[in-house]
Every structure is written in structure tokens, then in C-alpha cells.
Image (cartoon, rainbow over all chains, first blue to last red; front, side):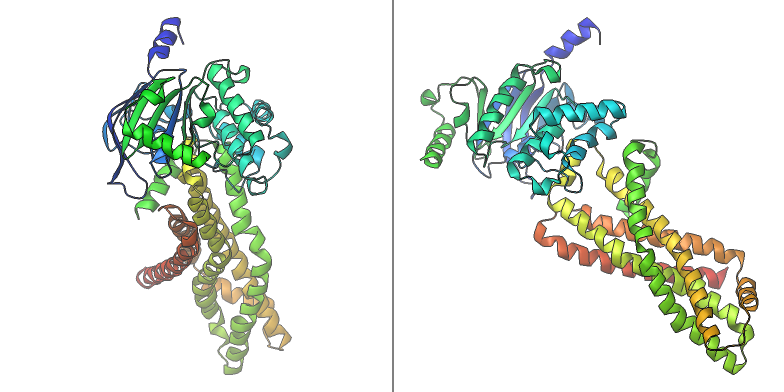
Length: 264
Length: 242
């Protein structure tokens, strides 16, 4: 890539939605979110809060180009979706599902190896080295030969992360990665996400664009990601370090009240 | 039908894509729908050889109709029972495993996980299974027919039927035509493909919950049996009109 092309590439928003409606998996005609207007620049770190069944998973699936928007204009990494979709776009976007969704017929190491092998980006020895690095990075090395069903849900989430990262995506979408984690795993995830957002040495030191949908934003208090809230078919981008106590939007208050109930 | 055409299109357009992943998958499927079923087929060929060929040889000898033996064995074993029974036996083991595996895969959201990784589920999951199933049914059909004919003769021999092995083999060879070999190949490959496509379709093509896995699997087995029987009827028409 030339210098000017690289600069142009950096200026293209990772995500740009104008008047987008998102449908649910169960009913492809009913919108779970309407009129989403949102722009995510490369390297930004967004946390989207939404209560259970607010459409977070459907929103992330649409954002990852697994489903088309029902209405509106959506550009992913500068490409109009779904019109300009190519397999190459898919390789630039990583999606970590709620629970990791490992492939249960493959071992932990084979799960991480599969995307590398399928897209044959490297040779076999380089593949093995990359898998080893990813397992080391996510603490999965001792579990490499185990089957996913035997390692526990918290480690399955990390497996989903390792598998999504192995192709070194520019944009990483995570669906409720912290739900059900104990304090040790929670602390690891928060630290690791911070490292990804500032640039990890094993991932070319490039700040990764992160979008994390969660039902609880409390772990991010005191940190500096941009915040959005979703619910009642609405998506509200609040931006970086919003003072939530001064926001008059009912959706934000409803979400914060629900969080307080959950914590208490 | 649409799923069959999609599978065929993916097979043709992506036959050179990710062969490091798909070739080992085909080998695994071939082992599951072929090699690992050999002991079961050995037993079943002995049972069928005893029940059909042994009885036919024995009774035709008593009736003095030994000269029709080859024709009858070719019609019953080579053209009809061999391929159809092989297909149904493979369906009962590998087809059932396929349907349950894939329905569970779908219910656990692994198909979406593959799509998110840029891996085409039809290419990664369906194509190797259809190829493996087709080749498996073809290989087992040959093995099964030879086993039935061999065990049948053994049964007749042990019963003191005055029929030399060369006479038995010549009768069968004389009754076989080149069309039998062509149709046997096409038929057994088609049975395997039909079982592979239907079990994959019922497992993968629609969103499923875990509680729906058993129903989807039973549906896949029933539709596969019906499809194989219909296909068999189609091939009977070919024999009647060619």
C-alpha cells in the first residue's frame, strides 16, 4: 500500500450508518433498531450498553455484515453493505460471539488454526506459530489440545476472541464478552481490551477499532471509551466520556436504573 | 432443489479453494461413511447372501432352473438390493450421524461463527460430506454385492448344491451388461449424494433450537429413505426403456 493510499485508508470511517434499521434473526420483517445514525473512526473504542433482548446481538451481526440492514445506508470500512460486500471485507472484521461459539468438533488449537488454514494466508509452520502466539496471548496454551466443551464457558469466550484475532482484523466486534465472568477473568479482559485499543505488539501495534456490546457498562467507569446506549428500538451514541447524570434522554436513565438494580 | 444447486455451484466454483481444509474433511467423511462401516457390511452381506442367494441357488437347483441363476442374481442383487440396501444402511449410520451433527452445529450457532470467519459453511461442511457420502456408498455397494454373492455361494456349497465356482461366476458374468456397470456407478453415487444433501439440508438450512434437533434428524432420515426409493424407481424405468 502506498503512503497516500494508507493515509486515505486511515481516514475512512470503520463504521458509518445513516438511517439504518436492523431486523431480528427470529423475524426478518420486524426491526429491533430503527434510524441508527452512527460513525466510528478507525482506532476508536466504543462500548454499547443495552439491556437483555434490546437487539445487541442482531445489531452486531448486521454490523459484521452477517445480515443486511433493513433500511438506510451502511458503510463498513468504506464499503457499502451489502452491495459492495466481498470476502476480503469479512477478513478485516472480527466478531466475538456471546459465549465464543467455538466449533465443538475441533480442539481449542484447531479452532484457532481453522481460519488461517482456510484462507491460507501463511504457510503451515507460520500458521502453527501464529496459533501458538494467539493461544499464549489469551492464556489458552494449557488447553490447546482440549475440546471446547470441556474447558468451561469463560475459556470458551477467550477461544472466541483468539479465533477472531488470529486473522488480525482492523475492526473487532464483541458481544457481551464480560457476562458471567469471575473477577480474575474480568480483570484479564479489561486489561486485554485496553491493550488492543492502544495497539498490541502481536497485532502490529496498530490500535484496533473496538465495538463492545454489553448489558452492563459499569466495568468501563473511569475508563475512556465512547459510549452508546440502545433500547426501545433506539440507538443513542453519546460519545466519549459523557456525563450521564446530565443527559436528559429517558433511554439513558432507564438503562442506568436497570444497571443499578442489577448491581444492588 | 435450491440447496442441491447451491451445493453443486459451490463445489464447482470453489473446488480449488482451501484444499488444505476440505481434502482432509473429505477423507474424514469417507472414513465415516465407508471404511468404518466395513464390519457392519461384512455381517450384512453374509446375512443377505445366506437369505437371498443361498436360498435362490438351493431352490433353483431343486427346480432344475440353474441356468437362470445368473440373471436372477444380477437383477436382484446387483441392480436392486445391493445399491438400495447399501444406501439405507449407510443412511442408518453415517446419514443419521450427519443429520444430528449438523442440526446440533446449527443450533449451537456454529454456522454463524463460520460465516463470521469468512468460511462458507456449504464449502466447509456440506461439500465434503456429500462427496464423502457418495464415494462411501459407491465403494460399499461394490463390497456389499461381492460379499453377498460370495457368501451366497458358500451357503449353497455347504448345502451340497452341485454348482462349481466357475459355473457360478460365468453365469453372473454372462448376465451382466455394460449398462449394469454404468447404472450401478451412477446409482450408488446418486444415493450417496441424495443422502448427503438431504441430511445436510435438514441440519443446516434453517435456524434451529436444540430442542428441534431430534425432529430435524428424523425428518432428514425419512426424506432420505423416500428419496432413495424414488430414485430407485427412476432407475427401474431406465432399465425398462433402455
